[in-house]
Amino acid sequence: MLRSFGPYPRLIIRVLLLAAFIGLARYLSNSSSSSTTMSPPPDASEVASALLSEHGLYLQSIQVLQSLWAGYGKICRITATPNSPQSSTSTSRTASSASTPQQFQSYILKLIAPPPTSSNNEGHIRKILSYQVEQYFYTHLAPQMPPSIPVAKALSSTHESRSGGSLKMAMLLTDLKQIYPIAGEKRSELTSIQVDAALDWLSSFHGFWQPRVKDFDHTSLVRPPLEEETHRKQQERLNSRNDNTTTVWLNGGYTYLATRQSEYTSLLSSHDSEWHEPLTDWIQDTSSISHYVAAVLSPPKTATSHTPTTPYMTLLHGDVKSENLFTTSDMKTAVMYDFQYVGLGLGVCDLAKLFTCSVPLSLLVPSDLLSASLPRKLSMQEGEVALLRRYWTNVKEKSGQAYDWDIFVRHWETALVDWCRFQASWGFWGNEEWLGARVRWVLADEGWRDGVLGMGEVEGEKGCVTLLLHRLHRIHALAIATTSIHPIETTATKIEFSNLPLIQFIAVPSAPPTIPLHSTFSPPFPRSVREYSNALFSQFSCLMRYLQYAHYTKFPISPGPKCCCGTYDASSINSFSVKFLI
Image (cartoon, rainbow, N blue to C red; front, side):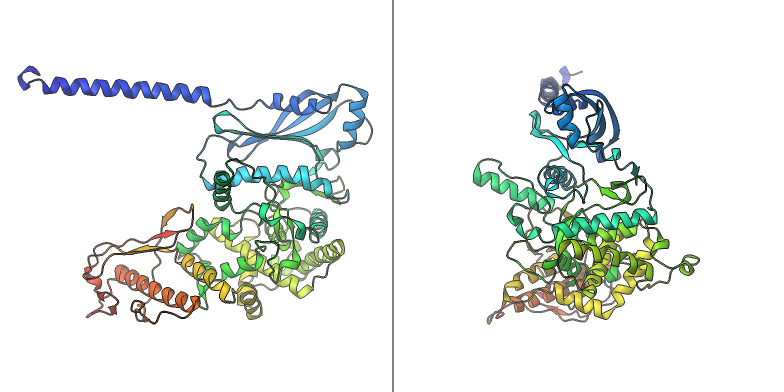
């Protein structure tokens, strides 16, 4: 049969067989290469034994307490014995159990061994940086703190890159449960005594660091994940080596706007969400309330920069919740752990998560409001005031610095709005009804609104470029309208934000726009960056509105408004696509 068609089928078969053989050989080669270059996961017992040996201790037992998020490692409780009386005495002084030598001593091993994943994945980069930040805190900052602010002590730590590009980090910590046996664990609410203890620890922690963060080297602080990754690669190219030392986050926590752009974009497109309009709509044709709030809460990027909130900046824990807290048996003294997101910020940002996720609602609102649904707008109640005053009084005492109550409340309410922005884009949990009612009240307060706009506004000619970027960022800097309109030529206006992914999102206006399209710029050009910003924004925004409204409603525009390139006819649209940089 094949012979009747000449030699070509045989040639084709030979080529296919050869291609299949080459493909199989490459597959086997890659598999073999992967198996030889990918290091096996580190054995917890071996790591524990190595760290213990530095202190003359032998490993007796090891128990896995929990796996880290997304399989990035594990936390183990280990029991060790000293190999000499001298090592027993020295290690018992650092152990959190007793000051006298013990035959058996308990420690915590935190072992980080990330699974294989894309190195440019933002979530992966965030986790890796967070573990490095935590190790820096325990080894460099925690030893500076007084005994009155208890934290676990790091006996030993290791941080090494392994063959195949993998990473291994480990810390040997004192076991907090020896003195603080009551764990918050996964209970959503703490007792009133535990809440007071948590506030006392937080206010002491914030108060201790408030006068000291001004001495931090801002150039070494860790930026948002993608920005930090880009910065490090640039430094490696310049220095031909990796000498980046991870310290703490420039902005503490993991929910601030600069590191949650994808979630914010999701909120932008969630037109059915109650929070879409109040948190994402523009104010004064400049930016959204979310961006103003972020500007108020964000630490200055350099040590010489100064904002109205700079004097109140401190070191945040970054993830305050009941799961990260232990207390003594009487619950009157607390200790926090898990410092992956420690960094600069206003202390009220830690309070916002604590109040929403771990404080009983009965401590925030009076009993008569608990028996029915909370009002849609809720002012600050006596219980909330009492808890805040406890924190505020102690943080002033520990810091030795002034903090006006009205300014503190302004900061607190701003932090609530920011926390609501994150939950609205991520998913609500905890005292969500209380949070929503409080934020509605805050957003309706003209005094708060004017204050935030005043503190967050970018002023001066130097800030005009920043204002332009903020506006372009709000419309996400890249729009492509694919149409068959003639003589309009399809063009793309693009501002690059490094390492930022493309997504799709379309905002639909509720009514036909009335602002006329602007003609293209011609001499004389705008006299300042601010005028250029205004003109560019108006032209770009108006074109977007016309295209969006016409596409979704088939609104008959005839003979059609004039734009810079000709007549716009909605009926001639064949397809429409908008892509944005986030």
